[in-house]
Amino acid sequence: MLTFDLADVRRFTADLDARMDRCDNGEGMECANLDGTLRHYAVVCCEFCERVRQWGRAIFYGQAAFDPEVENLWLDEGVELYRRASGLWEYRQELEGECFVVQNGAALGSALWRLELLLTSWVTPKLTIAPLARHGVALTPAATEEVQKRVDALPPLPGNWQPTDPRQRTLFKKLQNRRSP
Amino acid sequence: MAHGSPVPLTAVLIGLDSAEFEAISGWPFADPFVKRLLQEDIPQRVQFGNCKIWTYRDENCSLVGFGTLDVCSDCRDFSGGYPHPYIPLLAINPTIKSRGYGTSIVRHLIDEAALLALRGLCHDVLFLDVYTTSEKAVRVYAECGFAAISPEPILDPQEGGKTYIVMAKRISIAS
Image (tube, rainbow over all chains, first blue to last red; front, side):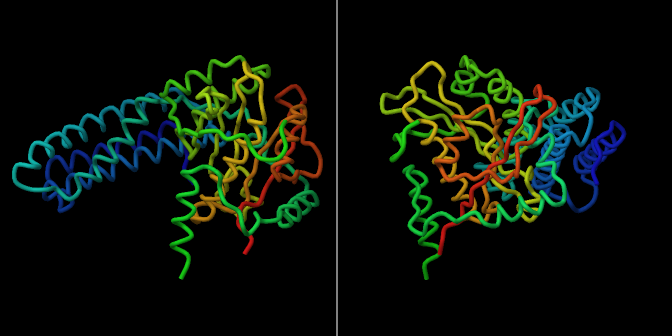
C-alpha cells in the first residue's frame, strides 16, 4: 500500500531525479537515442502526475494527513521535471521537420500537457466535505445486505433509451454501430 | 419542478481555469454548503480524480446551471469493487427562476454516465448523496428514476447533525 509521508515522497522524487540524471548522461540502453529519451521523459512525467493524483485522493478521502512539506516537495519536483522535459521537447521540435520525425514526440507532448495542467491549476488537497466520501454508507452488516438488495433490484434504462444531447446522440450511434454485427 | 419533457439546454464542458467556472463559483447560493462543495471538493475531484463539469445554457444563451460527474470508488462496496459514476454536485443559478432546469441537468448527467458505462469505463450504477433537508433535490432525483438505497437517513455529525441519503440509478440499457 502506498503511503505519503515525507520520507516516502522523498524516496520517490529522488528515484525520479536519479532516473532523469542517468538518462541525461546517456547511461544504459533506455536513453540510447533521442526517441528513447523522449519516451523515458514521457513515462517519468506520467508517473509523477499519477503519484500526485494518488496523494491528493488519499488526503481527500482521509486516508493520509496533509503535510505542507510534502506539498512543497511535489511542487519543486514538478517544476524541475517540467523544466527538463520541456527543454527536451523544444530540442526535439528544432530537429523535427528538418530531417526526421521522432516517434515518441507526441507521447512526451501529451505527458507535458498533463504536467502543465497539474502545475498551473495546482490544488492543495484537503479532506472532502461530502458526507458519502467522508463516511461512506457506514452500515451494519444487516443494513449492508439490505442496500445490496436495493442496488441489485434497480431497473435498467428502457431498451429504447436514447440520450437527448446532440453530442451524446452522435456518440451513442457510433457505439451502436460498433456493436451491431 | 416541471414534469414531462426536459427543458432543452445546451451543455458545455468546462475547466477549472475557465471564465464559466469563475462565474458559477460567484453565484449567491442560498445554501453555503453548495458553494463550499463547488470551491473545495470539485476542484479536487477534477485534479485528483475523473470529475467533469458542465455548464448549461438556455435558448437565450443564459447560464442557468451546472452539473458535475465523477467516476470514483466512493460506493465500491455496492459496485463489486469497480469504479462507478457519481454526481458530486449540481445547481441552478440562484438568481433566475427555474423552469425545470434541474431535471434537464440530472437527465444529461444520467445520459453521460450511461454512455460511460456502455463503453465499459465504469460500473452500471450511478450514485449520489443528498441531504434530506434538500427536499426539492430529492424530489427531482426521484422523478428522474433514482431510488434511495440507504435503509434510513444517515447522520452527518460534521454538518450540524444533518442527515443524508444515498440514491442510485441503474444506467445499463435493457436488452
